[in-house]
Image (cartoon, rainbow, N blue to C red; front, top):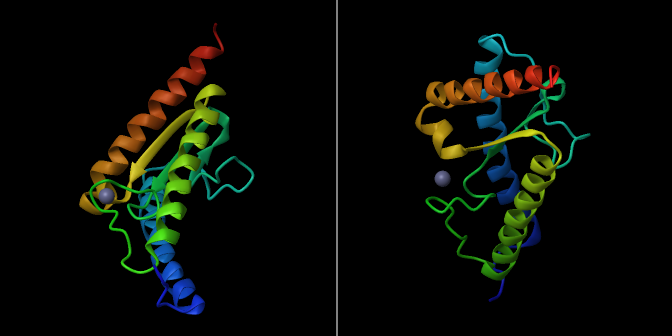
Length: 146
Ligand SMILES: [Zn+2]
């Protein structure tokens, strides 16, 4: 399979897809902030750079774009350069597994949210994130008494 895109076109496409990530991230963090939650965004110092993190309660939240994280409903393989994309996206999925295992094995609370859920209903998605945060907080508070 030959690549009909030049390298720069491909980079442009990748950036275009990436900028969508930023928009779902902004929507979610604005809504969480509005509801009074304080957290760090895009935390490079934590493994896998979680989109949202509250270290105090060992909470990490990843907002997964359907394309980059290989959602089974919406991840259409680009028509060009399929071999490149196949391995790229496969690697992303493996990386997600590694990240999940790391946090779960180290006693963190990890949540993954799909882009399509955010697009379907920001409010309902943030409701479930809030529920997750509250549950994690409770568990961390309980640890103090064990
Ligand atoms: Zn999807």
